[in-house]
Image (cartoon, rainbow, N blue to C red; front, side, top):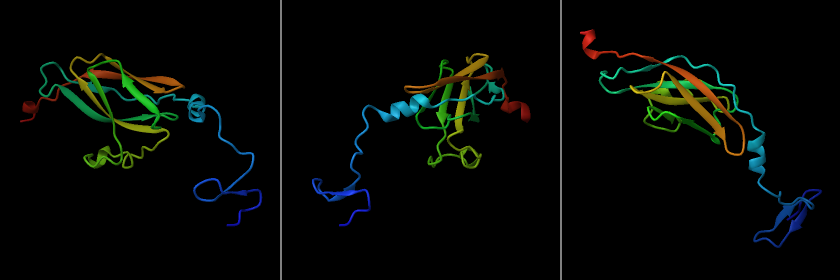
Length: 158
């Protein structure tokens, strides 16, 4: 085996490999340093979402919501809400059960700057849903989504 200029043949490993002398393992956790340097947001304002009335059949209204901002679509970013009446589910391209309109690629929503989520809002949700984005070891930001009460009564359309 012949190594390129600047490399030497290392025979101590299981298979001989070419290594560059003087290059070693980085001390600490380089991923933590990278996460700490990332910024999040600002989050583009999200249009108002519907909340059912307490007498509305079904008890919750779901919608695919686009969340846009710097680095919001990274896998390392955790997304949570304070309200148990607001549920979040990140919609992933590989999920076979998604409708075409819920696919991130069909909506032009790609990481790093976009995340498509299914937002399910129950009748006891607050007037404003607060979403929190966090990177472990790093930045955090929030988004506020106004919530409006509405119930599409299926019997009223007849």
